[in-house]
Amino acid sequence: MKNLYISLGFMLVAMSVAAQNAATAEADKLFKKFEYLDAAKEYQKIKSKDGYVYKQIAESYFNVYNSKEAVKWYAKAVESKQDAETYYRYAQMLKAEGKYEESNKQMQKFASMAPKDQRAIAFNQDPDYLPKLKTQTRLFDEQLLDISDKKYADFGAVLVDNTLYFTSARNTARRTYGRNEEPFLDMYMATYNSNGTISNPTPIEEINSKYHDGPAAVTADGNTMYFSSESFKEGNYEKDTPGQRTGLIYLFVATKVNGVWTNIKPVPFNGKTWSTGNPSISKDGKTLYFASNRKGSLGATDIWKVEVKGNNTYGEPVNLGKKVNTEGNENFPFIADDNKLYFSSDGRKGVGALDIYVKDLNADSEALNLGLPVNSPQDDFSFSFNVTANKGFFASNRNGNDDLYLATPICGVDAVVMVTDSKTGKPLVTANVAILDAKGNIIETRKTNTDGWVTYSIDCNTPYSLLVSADGYTSVSKPLDKHAGGKQEAKVSLDPIESIIKGDMVQLNDIYFEFDKSNITQEGAAELNKLVAVMKARPNIVIMAKAHTDNRGSEEYNLSLSDRRARAVVQYVISQGVDENRISGQGYGESQPRVNCTECTDEQHAQNRRNEFIIVKK
Image 1 (cartoon, helix red, strand yellow):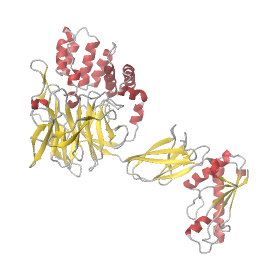
Image 2 (image 1 turned 90 degrees about the vertical axis):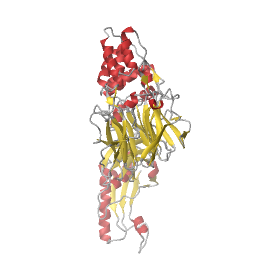
Image 3 (image 1 turned 180 degrees about the vertical axis):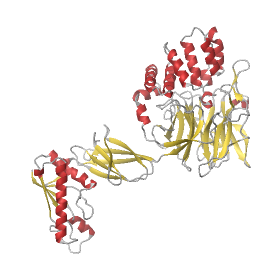
Image 4 (image 1 turned 60 degrees about the horizontal axis):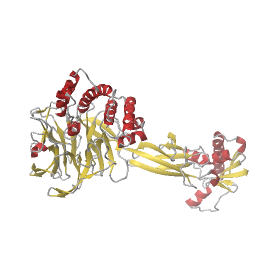
C-alpha cells in the first residue's frame, strides 16, 4: 500500500484526469475520486483498450503501490508512446520488483525524453549505481517494532525524551477511509523504556478528530506539537463532483497545558491550493521543516523550512533547493539535533521506490542514501533519529503493510586515504594502499583511483595502520588513530626514490626489531621496501648493510645480536627479488658508536642503535 501521506493531498490534484471519452468516463470518474482499485476494475472492463487505458490501469496500481500489477500494465502502456513521467514510474515499479536491468532500460528512455530533469542527469552520470549502493557500508541494523499493527498502517514515529509519538490506522472503531478501506489515521503515544521496550500505545484524544491526524513533531521541551491533519477542519476543500470533496493537508499547532494538548490552530502558511504537512522542528524550536507542493516546488512535493517567530507567527517559507529536492517526491523531513536532515525521495538514485536519505546541513555535501537494510525495493519513509538515545525509527511497506522499524546505528568509519608525490603534490594513481589491523596483519590492499585516493570501511574506535607504496617511490607506514565514526581522512606523501640516496648511503628510517629478537617486523619490512625499490631502480648498485647496537649489555652479546639482525635484513631484501650478490651484511655491535658516551642518555642510545646501508658500488 502506498502510504497515505504520499497519495493523500499531495498527489491527488496532480493525478486527477479528465474523462478521455464516453467509454472511459466511469473509470475516469473513479480515478479522479481516487478510488484507484475500483477505477482499475472499470478500465479493465473496456473491450477496446488503448495506450491511455493501459496507462490509467498502471497508474491506479502505482498509486496503491501494487508493483506487480503496475509492472504488468505499464508494459502494455509503453507499447504506444507515453510521456516521460510514465517511463519513470514504470522504472520505479520494476525496481520494486527487483527487475533492475529492465528498470535501467526504462530510465534510459525517461532520460532521453527529459534530459534536463535532475533525475535524468543523476542517472546519466552513474547509470550503474545500484551495485555500489547495495555494497556500501551498512549504517544501521533494522528491527520490526513489536508495537506495529499486523494489519493496519503505522508510520511517523518520533522519540521525544522517553515518549514515542506515531501515526496509526489501527483504531477499528473509527470509520474507514474509502480509498484503502482502512480506518482514518490517529496520533498515538507510548513510553520508550531505557531497556528498549515500549509500552502499549494510547491514542492522543485531544489531537485526534474524525479526519486524518498525524504525523507530528514535538518541541524539545515537550510542550508544542505541530501535526498534519485535513483542511476540512477549517472548512476548506475543493468541490469535484456532487457528493465528492477533495481536501488538502494542513499543518496545525497545539500547546500542552497541565498535560493536555489544547489551543489547536492552523499555521498561517497553509494554502487553499496546496498541501502542507509532515512537520519536523529543530532542537531550538526556531525552524520548522515540512513537505509541500506549494508554488515554487521543484517537483511533486518538496521539503521546505520556515522560521518560527512565536505566537503563531512565522517567516516566509523557503525551499531547500536542489541539494535536497528533485522533480520527484521529497517528503517526511526530520531534522536531528546534530543538524542532519533525514527525508524520503523517489527522485534520486535509490534501491526502490521511496528511499531514505540524509543531508548534513552543516556541510556542502550531497544527500546520502542510507542504503541497506533501512532501504528496500519498497517504500521506506518517515525516518527520525534521536541523537541522545542513538536510535532511529522509520516505516516501510516491505512486508506488504506500513510497519514501524527500529534503526540501530552501526558504528563505522570511512577511511579516505589520499596519496601524493611529496615533491609535486600531485596525486599518485595506482599506488598500493594496504590496511593493517592492530597486530600488523594486512586486511586488504587496494590501488588508488585516478584522483589518487582510496576508501576503506573500518570499525569505530579501533586502531589500524596503512602501508603505502608505489613504483618509483619509497613506501610509507602510517598509523590510523581510533575514530568514533563518520569520515577519517589520511594524507600520505611518498618520496621519489632518488630522495633517499644521500652520497654513498641509502638513508632509511630506523629498522625496529622486537626486544632481543632479530626477525623482521611489518614496520621494518615497510622501511626495507624503500631499499628494495632503490636497488630495483638502479640495478648496478651493491649495498653493505651494517647493524649497530648501543652499549647496554655485553660486547659479545651485542655483536652477536647485531650480526643476526644484519643477516635478517639481507635475507629480507633477497626475498624481494634482489640478487644475493648485490647485498651483504655485518653486525658491529657497540664498536662503532655514533655518539661516544659512557653514561649515555636514552636519546644517545637511540642514535647509536641504528642501521646503515652503504653503497659500495654504483
